[in-house]
Amino acid sequence: MVQRPVIHLRGPPTSLMVGLIERLLRTSSDLIIDGPLHAMIMQHYANDLQYGEASVFTSSQRALSEGHRVVMVGLGPFNTEQEDGVGFDVDGVELILVTSAEQVNEVSFDWVDAHVAVHDLMPMHRGGSWVPSLLCRWYDALSNGMTPTIEHDGQHWWVGEIDVADALVRLLMSSTPFPKVSKMSGRRCWSDQQTLEEFVMLYKRTAAGQSGSFGVSELSAAPSPNIELQPLMVSDPVPMTLEENRAQRPDLSAIHDALHAADGDGWRPLVPVRTAMMHCLAHLLEPQAKV
Image 1 (cartoon, rainbow, N blue to C red):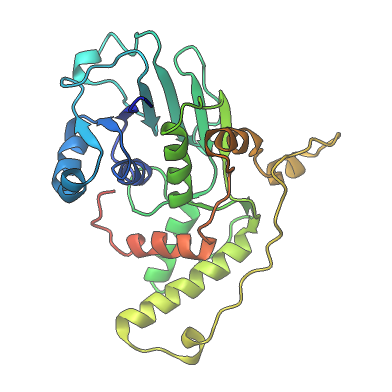
Image 2 (cartoon, rainbow, N blue to C red):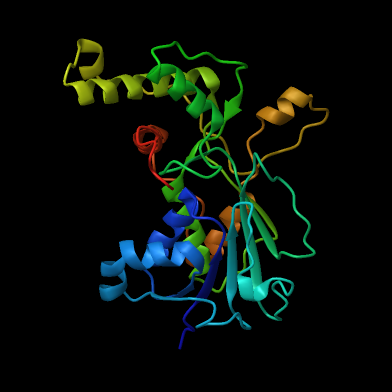
């Protein structure tokens, strides 16, 4: 009989954390959540809990034990009040840290077993530290009637929150351990200029939809940017300039191999960047959103 996964979720209620929990609630698992996040989940997802197979507990109801997994999303804090000064000092527990690669690219493995660095995430909700700063800057400019500008034409490997959360759940629901170091990103490189053009087009369509004043430019089909698909494995030609190194796509081979071992499929982001950007923009338009 397959053992029911027990997953402790730690960290502030950011967009990725909520997205991860939403998907775990559709699985047959025991979720241990504390604090305000627990109250929010019990209130907003009452139907999922009533009719689904997942169960939600607090850490006082279900203590950390051998065979459990702890998923820490963001920058913390991660300890509960009962654990302050004790930490995660339990044998046989897998500690998984998930961060934005822009904030934390390397960690000490003295206290975690695995680190997942997510590059260029397009979050579903506003709040926390996951919304890309350039999108916030461009949104502020557009909403104030100004023309957004590009400070430097960087490169991005945008990936939707749904794809990241789904991949995490696939591993959490399997017996496959997380790689010690893994990275998640999209497979197509977007320049700042391409990203800005797409963002402005979506913003104008949204504004037209809110006002009901559609023009020809809003109603016509927008062409997709010419984005080249990159291979999963990143090679390291020598020598590389600093600019070439920055432009190189994150190595997705570790997460791809782990997912393939877990369920026979690999890392295959399915949500188009345009769709992910639409979700992100929709919640930028809701400044009162908490996550």
